[in-house]
Length: 454
Image 1 (cartoon, helix red, strand yellow):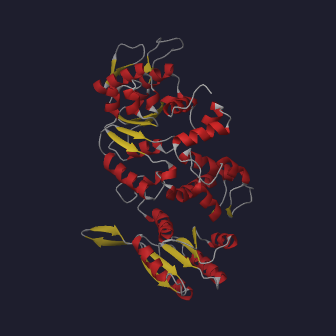
Image 2 (cartoon, helix red, strand yellow; image 1 turned 90 degrees about the vertical axis):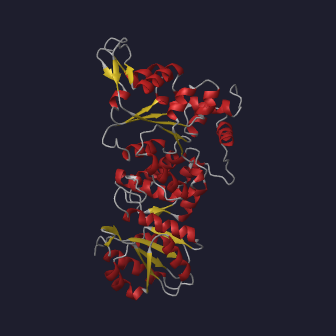
Image 3 (cartoon, rainbow, N blue to C red; image 1 turned 120 degrees about the vertical axis):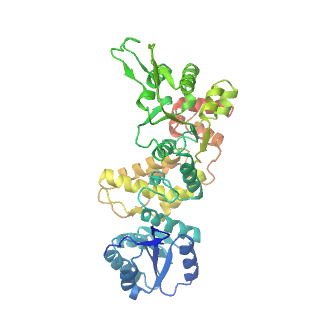
């Protein structure tokens, strides 16, 4: 039985009705707490005994089904979950265990549970599971704050919600945006969301990662060249500014652009025109600039490593992306997101990670941020046996990659020193472990006053 789309007619327009949570429980001592938590997180709670659950589900078409297990009859609770899963194709399922074990978690996943919460649970833990399950129920492409395609930025914690609100507010403007944050925090995803929610959404979104290019090529990639401008230029070629005309140009790692190109970029932005390399004809363009950096550009401007006038031109609106260690509540939804992604790409059917594995991932400090988490999940699925389908733990080789330890360093300087010490001061390997370029490593060593000569 598929759940129909429910709506109500309010103030002259149709609006989506409040989601319904069907709670299956039998004498749970925490019933009132479950009731409050579900209601606070946006659902209308409907309680039922296991015997009446199927009949009530046919009447109310629940968005979420929450099965509250008891220690006395887990087998009956799992059977109830399986029956409802077979009956309701449009609902999401959550299993709340009073006494937890890995065997019970695996059985719950096999019976159709998409989320598993165990005792001792807190309202925050249950609320997060409910909001994660509610996310796909929202209108397609909209996260509830007027942000289209908001599902591209995964996470439901306070920091992520604040970022979504900020994105919804600044995207429709034409102002330049400077996105700051550590490597791997998702700056390109945010830049694309700014574009997709702007008036330029149907025009090109063009990226240029300046850190990935030698200085000699950045100018050519940005402005293009005329035929014969240099050896090998057998034909004229447009640059990224021309390719992005009418749309958005994303300048990633803009702090790595050299000073001569900074001057030409500033002049182009002020005049809304540029000259190709080797050209004498001015080319007009209409582009919104979104730039990103993991550097402190104000400090770089004070040290004359970055033009102050260009910094002011780019820094009209500032967005800071917090590192993953500051939003650990987003790790479980990110894990589920990447599991779904790699299941599709690899043709796998992994149902999830064990509770112990998720706890381990939440405790790790993630120097490489979201990009490192993605790599860990990919490595995990690659190393699993092909027939694996249930929930899994983190294998020892991935645990060694995480280098997990209680009291792991949280400051950037401590993490940098740990990486250098662990690699016997091999700067190439340390940069790789931190998911930085070597130039970024040298710059960080200089900023934190760590001897570059060692």
